[in-house]
Image 1 (cartoon, helix red, strand yellow):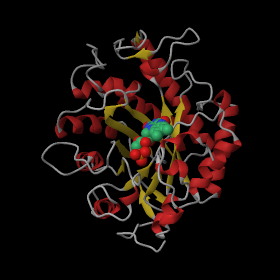
Image 2: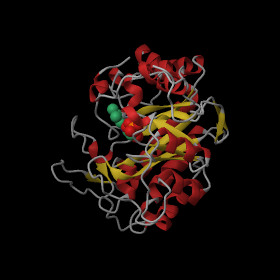
Image 3: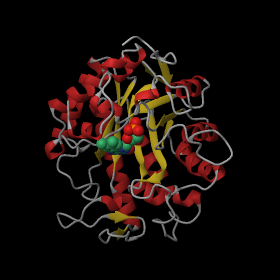
Image 4: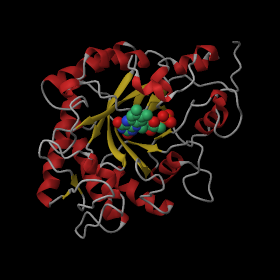
Length: 360
Ligand SMILES: Cc1cc2nc3c(=O)[nH]c(=O)nc-3n(C[C@H](O)[C@H](O)[C@H](O)COP(=O)(O)O)c2cc1C
């Protein structure tokens, strides 16, 4: 098919939070559960390197569990722990670097979404039992300290393995987001109440990760309004409330923000056009990553509306956000960025849910 892109895709070098990247396109974190015993394999290294080789400036790994029994339950979800997992990650990092890419590790604790297997009850801010979910344990002050130590440890492992950046997963209804969300955070101590207090524990985690990872490489924080099981939920009703939360992350040492939303073109608040990443950048001055349904439809690359590549590239050029993350479209199309930039539309497979079941 002839090139019929509606706009030039800027696959060109950029600097993000001090990190030189080959392009402003990012692989979004996606859990694939391909690491038996929590150890990333050669197949995992090849999977990330294959994508890094095709126009992505930064790869963000799937959620990687910090070293604490409450962080997660699934055997094949990777860990960020010393020993075999650390060695496995070093091989992944080397493979991505060998392909000319950069890679950030996403650090994850599932909170209430950890299943109560192995005799471990999930840890949450307030023990809120959500409909249809098992009982959880409300974290004590000692538990808080224990988890902060786990995050420091994970960040140290990521630093030793050679990651270019780390991302703190504070989105989608997992532990840190359960602190940010009033529905799941009913605490009356310093970690609950106002937006600033709800942000206090996640900010402590950012501080811990910064301490473990060192001062030189970026610490990114991923946040969202929506939860995986509550799309209309919100951590901040107004830009002012969001500013309080994000400022706490900035003060704690965050170098960039990754604003997760389901459709990048939707305004984050009524009455103003900025999307969530746009607000994050405006409120804090930190660089921001946007995400959400990039490339998922056939006419994305040829159309002209706000949800098309034209709308995306215009907003990127205007500086509303700095990087663009792609998720599902990369599952079946490791070379989506280079194909799209060259107008090789016939080389791109339409997105299908079944792509989640293949791993290459
Ligand atoms: C299979 C799959 C696994 C995901 N796992 C994670 C994850 O581990 N951490 C995370 O922050 N987001 C995760 N996400 C969300 C993606 O990072 C991304 O925000 C979402 O897919 C929207 O982007 P897209 O429309 O380009 O796919 C996952 C999404 C998918 C489809």
